[in-house]
Image (cartoon, rainbow, N blue to C red; front, side, top):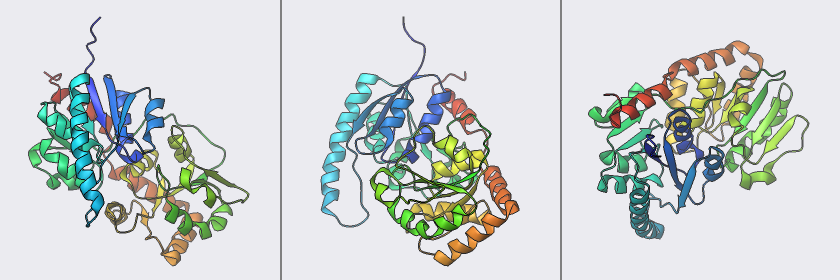
Length: 342
């Protein structure tokens, strides 16, 4: 029996930020999926948990400074483009979706050669190099906020918001604080937040996602729960939180917005995350603390721990800042690109 379902190839990885929106779409849009991900990232387990077949490739990376590794990665990029051509030729997708990452670059280039349409999703406020390399070859480019429309050719851009995985809301007896550095964890964030954990424990349980390589940073304190990594249960954990302290990746920020949570963002220093955090701070949708600013962090935490109005105000502003129908808008866009809206 021949299936009428379209075939969609998903591409991304290295971190969960470029994977989560794609999995959210795959949950809602019925299709036959194949995921091209990275060899070394944390995403393979969560892709498998979603019952999606994946192929892992060694991703390349372009460093914006002189490094001999760039010459190696140019060679690797060529090999990955040839491999992507073979993967696409065998799978024969009707559409390719990506939310960034260098894993996706050779896939999108190969798709252009084979005339397979591509939708590139831009999450962060600043356009990363990977998406800049893919944008000329995309049929459509989706963005989270209207402020991002001018970053690409306007005729390609669709404002959708950021697709977020669905979840079942539960009622809990006790609220918590969640600290997370993202899918890989963040060793420097863990060090920065460590002196404040005893203060947090006076009011809350603290659930700390350290990262699988940072298990030695865990503390032995009553009310403190460390994790190496949380995959399918992360949304459930975030839904319990009164306060979330995290890096400033747009995927987790979007999940916090969907859940109406108050955020303290500690972006990776000198990175695109600083623009994400400052954009939210400008809209009073999160508190931004630069890593190493101990006095500012202490002042913000004192205010958050004692003011439910401040927590609620930040949560409401964050929720209202994000477009609310991202998944539905994505379904409409996919059908349009596939010609199913006619």
